[in-house]
Image (cartoon, rainbow, N blue to C red; front, side, top):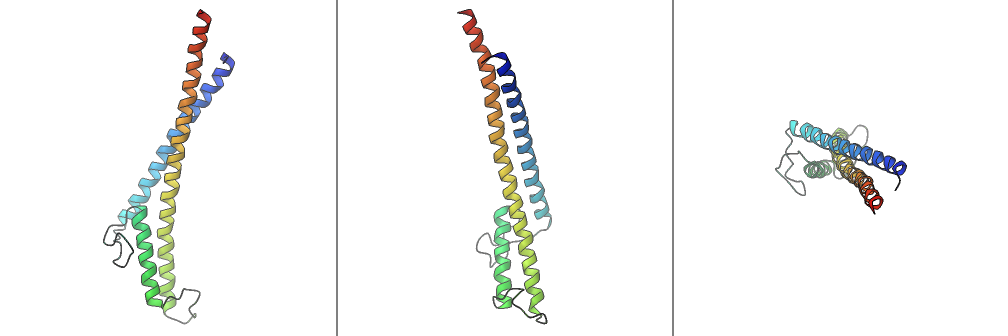
Length: 150
């Protein structure tokens, strides 16, 4: 590899390494903010949740479990009818609406966790590729020097 080829490879390697590390930090920060926000609400997973009942909602699994518990409670109170299925004058319509809003909020946090994990994973791949490119660029200069001495 010539010097003119080596420089762009090294440059893209450094850019990839820095970008990947930034993505890992940004994803970790997002995960931390979502965890902090959920924890500050002091929500405990309801007893009728399919799993993690009684634990604090502070991660994607407990948020998902709480949303499932809310769905079960809402369905029990409304006889399995959704907000759209209930008449406008039905007092259970507000229960169905609040249940749907709470579930949507919790599912939004689950999605935020998923996006954070995706960004962290992608950042690790980008950083790894960037590191590999810098090593490739560094290795070619060593080979060129060895060949020049032969």
